[in-house]
Length: 424
Ligand code: HEM
Image (cartoon, rainbow, N blue to C red):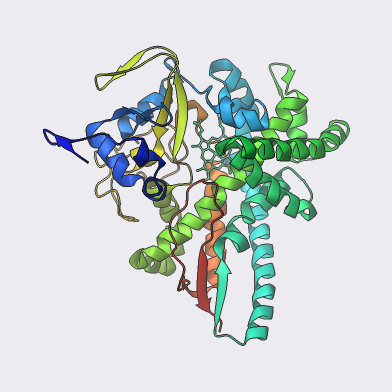
């Protein structure tokens, strides 16, 4: 890249289309933070905002920025959900669903997480013992993705909605198809919409049954929930059930796999967690900062907004880079280092508004402000509990030789994280 008076030339379209950026966007994001903190992406036309303070300010600013772009891709597959609404319309739906996943309700979910983790470990152990018996090998192999991470959050969500676990395999094909429909091109969009339509057809009779005879499950509660004397329409219930299925499964599976990746890639941190498994909570927080599952969120400028001397015109889309913000060296010292002892990161329960009163900053991997992730406590509980239980049964786990592991974000290609462990 050429430089004018010490300022590097801005990245061009080839950079954003390139494999290097897809695999490791951090060097480009650093350059943007340092020299082009508000930058129009030449491929998408969206205005990229990459510094922590700017990202949190925009997330919180409902007067100037709308969440309506969530409707373009998420809404196009699921139908309208709370994610694309602003103000009172958003608050009405959020008040119905948010309490389901926090506080006492989350406590009730902990046995569900433990039970599902145990069932997966049992299944894997039996499968592993059979394979070992056949091969008489001294090492075992687990694909954290296929054997565990893509299974646990899905099974938990199926239980939360009280949908039969026997249907697991079909859900296991629906939810990635729906996610790829959100992020992919026209053909993937059609396939995602088809998977969503099949899921909705599957839900129709179940919703009717719960109308007549409600249970304790989330689907029943959605059917009967009332806010200001209003109930959710059947379409609202179904598109929310899509959101929960995909948001609950697709993101948390990446979180679990990334937690394993970061720990094994950083042996001293892994040793610390093995010595004191309570540190897994900190490890989860630091994983969400250094490379969480979601790279960015999009907002639309309602009015012209000028930031760092650049005017984002009304109507334009703004790309809030979670990856950029979470590695902003203005906030996090030595931000590319995975460190459970860092003092600049707030390690308590996630904050919805950025900085803690003691000055430390929360990661923004769950977003921020009014649309802050509804499932943040559930995701953490699944990743931490699941990892803790799995750690107990895998002896001396390490990356499988011959594989090239890396952290993962939501993306379309299939992905794996294969580990080897001592069989006996
Ligand atoms: C590590 C796992 C997860 C990550 C990284 C994640 C990330 C996010 C992010 C970044 C947002 C903000 C979207 C925006 O501002 O436009 C969000 C919203 C949301 N998430 Fe999550 N999420 C995770 C797990 C979950 C789980 C387990 C559930 C539910 C079971 C869930 C349900 C939702 C819902 C319903 C919203 C929309 C909230 C609103 O619009 O008010 N998420 N999530």
